Image 1: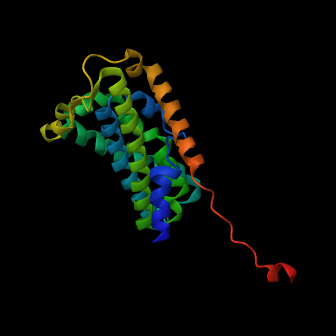
Image 2 (image 1 turned 120 degrees about the vertical axis):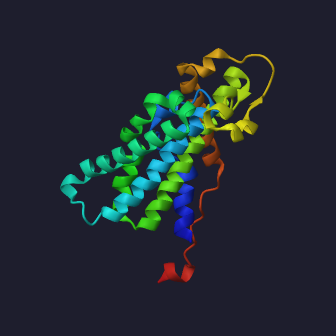
Length: 224
């Protein structure tokens, strides 16, 4: 149970791929001008990450070290193609918005990194859990960034959710304050600004946590 908690805590917060590892920053900056876009990209990456980890863990005994990286890339590319076609078929409006960035999940260092560092060394169950945790952390980071940039830049939150994710998601759409926001926040420069502030905020929160106390060594043991 402690191992499960550690994997979830690492993926979602302690070792968050964006705010701690600072990986996958290209999609993070490219598709977070709105919360809906960040959520859509995060969920697509989450699906590929879980499936990739499971397949790599299943096939790790058959994949030799010499070809493991090309094999991992082939697995990831196949899964991304499936997700891309599925989104085009059932979430066409979201697919039109994300467009080019869906195929680029193939070269997302998060997915290949977890295949290489975790899935090829652990069981299928733990690999699936790791994919879930890291994917949730990535989705959380993209959605939070998108929400902040959208609120500051447009004054809205989850704008267009009904068109992009289906009518049922229309309940998420809201206007935070009247009028327009600060335009720079939905431009590329705003992505860098918000990302830097969020990384700083996470580090400040982590620094406030008390350090784990080491157990004192009994005096008798020192004397011996």
